[in-house]
Length: 100
Image (tube, rainbow, N blue to C red; front, side):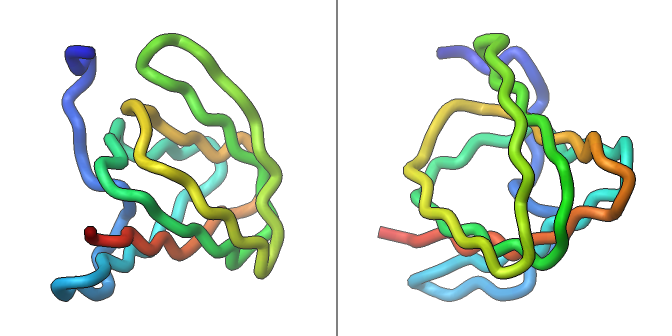
């Protein structure tokens, strides 16, 4: 699949990188979107706030999630997408990329 969008970082701030992991903070105000990004590594997210998010994938598919404080999710690498905070409160999570 060719990238239709200019791709950026998977989070808003890189907190730590070593030979095993990359740890990101993702903070989005209401109405704000992340960069279009591509998860090339498997990763874990941990919610730090309650929020309402929409994911839009490069193939046009969308879905919505409602992360909660402490909610964790494992995901395998997947196609490029963007996330948008469609709620009324700030969104924040920690994303841990697992290097192979």
